[in-house]
Image (tube, rainbow, N blue to C red; front, side, top):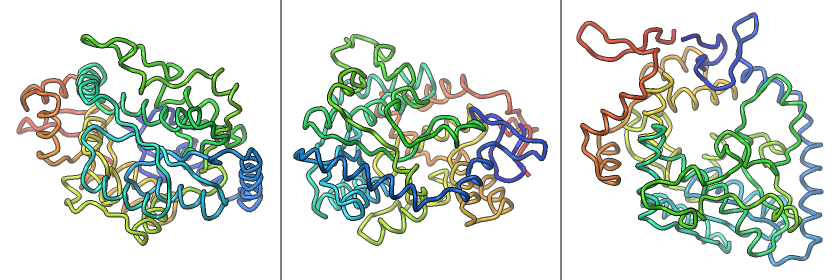
Length: 367
């Protein structure tokens, strides 16, 4: 594995490339944000908000929310900074955590209506099991529903604007020039793929009608309804740590597990669902990096830590996962721990090797 000389991203990250100095395109992109006229973009966003208010709909915008820091920040920003009448849209995980329940209730208690949608639990379990076996990614189906739910709420209640968080498509060297904050093609980005179609999720005895919560609405239907969709992260500089501090000050509860159980050194991520913690360990097995790498990069880009500190954190926590989370997932999809590890090992990437005592270790650990 090759690592960026500025952050801690490895070359197994989708879409990554390095310049002649060994610096990755993600670092170059985030450095370019220093040159953005954020005041001008704020004016653009205020104009979008004004246009939405002029529609005189029962709600001005929909914001998708979970029991997390970013959705709390987004909802309050849309209402208090943009002056919008906000409808929250929540797709509840099948096994939402108690912390997630508290945080969602805490947000709603601040004065919001909330469209809450819970897919069929039996379907959720079948899809999580299928996705674990087929892709080594048990949360993939739920991500479809997370993106589809706010759009369906906007269609149902005739809301003119949907606000998403930040674009997650792979960056290239020209993306900073092409991005316009327009989220109308969100169904084609990496998380959804296949244009948001749920047909490839079919498994066991499931029919396409069983997958409606996971099916992104037809593009023609969205366009006909005149719904505008935007990424808030284009108009307002994104800061996960600042969002966490903002939300914690307003009642957000965070996790109390140790970093080696969570596979991350902060306690304000993955608050509403435990499966994401297992999934990041699986990503580490497949690609040689996990969530600690992601959060360390974000903190390096924000100037909160040095690369040296990031390396230490990655070596200490990346890929870790408490056995209680693994066992809980096994119980959820009704398999044994041995079967879990048999499946997980099928996805182990070529960057791993056995050491002298038979344990797996990265062939080229970050330094």
